[in-house]
Length: 410
Ligand SMILES: *Cc1c(COP(=O)(O)O)cnc(C)c1O
Image (cartoon, rainbow, N blue to C red):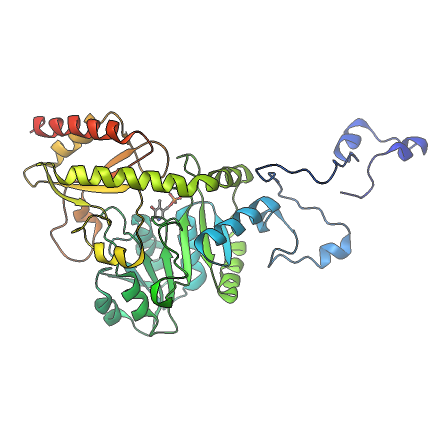
């Protein structure tokens, strides 16, 4: 702020301002050139302009300047640029949660009369959004089997404007035929391909540079999970590679008033340098646990994309060699839901709660039957484990003792 600082001149001129005025318009400017490991945290609703000309010429559609806190600060710009790099894209927008990022994509790219296609294992609240708000806005939705690219092709009509892909899918962790789905969708130029890339986190594969030169158009990420890494922050991102598509999303982002708090951005910036290390640690621990669980007599099936036999394992192999820290366990049919709940309650080293990506391992029981539209035979008692950063041996010992509770609660 270089306009009218309170200064010695004011004193000399006998126009010494009052204390409050002096403190608000204080003239001290710290020396330039400060350097530290972490970038500074800038907080603003109001952004000050040098003069009225600067105000009138304000430009908020790119990162050449600042206009209002909602349109970006050095802090949000820095995180956006780092996330674009992480995801292999060119532009990123921040949203207050992963779900808000999904909502932004739907609201920006769909209009009345359009149809959106969702994988049957889509993140649950995204399904609810389609069934309620999108339906109320005259936007239709249909579900497809993410393992069946031909089946997807049969569903696409001229009305279909947006295809969501999730890799791996929520709770049941089927890995979609990512390349096959993109190949089918690319036959239809009116169709935008959006990937919920939360599981891959920009680490497992590059969604804008997949084998065979394939790419998605939009990558959405719940930063709440691995980028934050703390189990304490809610944030989402929308990354693109195409400037026109980015601008469309950015205009909607501005009109919808989606802002994020600078201190939350700071925490995600702080988490990013250790993202790859943490992802690898979650991955290694989850694979050991998945393999151990697969050998237990109480377990019917372990769902984990890196485990041979898990649905979509070959599709995962086609694009990645890394996997996140999620493992879902389907118990033998002889166990009732109450016994599976007893197993979860007996766990000492796993918190019971939603979300994942933080240091603490978490467990949630699901009845998948009410969560899917297609097919049948979905398990009534599945436990999704989010493997944290505890010592793997401690987690396995804990699972082992909890399996006794499964037997006991009959
Ligand atoms: C958690 C999650 C979200 C939503 O993130 P929030 O920040 O909790 O809103 C979206 N998609 C997937 C796949 C998720 O796991």
